[in-house]
Amino acid sequence: MLRGPFLDKHWMGQNPDYEKADIVMLGLPFDGTVSYRSGSRFAPEQIRLASWGLEEYSPRFDKFLEDVNFHDAGDLGFPLGNTYKTLEVIEQNVEDIYNDGKRVFGIGGEHLVTLPEIKAVSKFYKNLAIIHFDAHTDLREEYLGEEMSHSAVIRHASKIVGAENIKQVGIRSGMKEEFEFMKQHNTFASKYSDLDVLKDKKVFVTVDLDVLDTSIMPGTGTPEAGGFQFNELMGWFEYLKNFDIVGADVVELAPDYDPTGASTAVATKVIRELLMVM
Image (tube, rainbow, N blue to C red; front, side, top):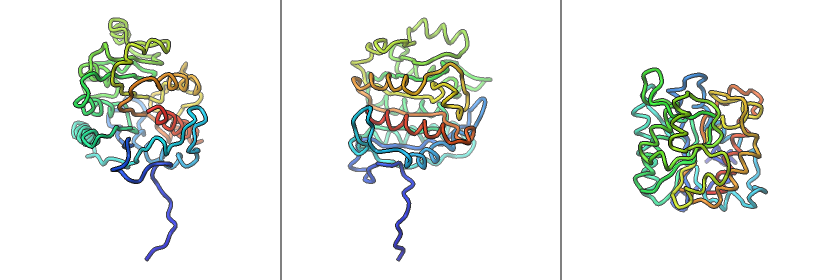
């Protein structure tokens, strides 16, 4: 009989008992529609390893990870090269999580993985809203003739929850038509109070890590200068403590583009702090 001890490859501070957990962390290693730099499919594994460099205590939120009561279910397995089947697998598994009375915390992977999460969660909450942190609008109808694209994820999600139930934070890149869509539907949030219209909603928070400036987040598929510093993003997270968050994800880390490992470390802390407000 092997005696160990053995290293744990799950997220630090997780509850190993799925049945007793409130939140389920789900790795979504898919980057099949990436339009620039692929590699975000490697993020969930690298984030788990990097999590062991963090403390379980968040001084900003005065809270421990064990207080969050989340279970790391590991990574989903996807059929190579089949985007539509991959999205079905995500939707089915997220739906199972909510059938069990729990909430999802997805780790991508590219941003398209958010769409099947939203589809699943919307089956349980009729007043679902989305708070979207990103450098990019993600409001295209399609990209190079392909409807299912990471650059179209929020546009497709708007057809599920309604554009009036979406707020977008940190946006600084997109097509003119996308910015016109944002203006038409008033989705852009430039200050904390712009989110207040969603306070009576059930909220899904999706964070594309390129919302952060390239100076601290070079390891992403579509880096965009002019973004948030870490503490700016944390200010928004602190404001979210007053919202009813029923699901979340953090996506678009492409760890191999930052050989220093700093981007992965930043992504891991973003995840820890977002867990604290759920």
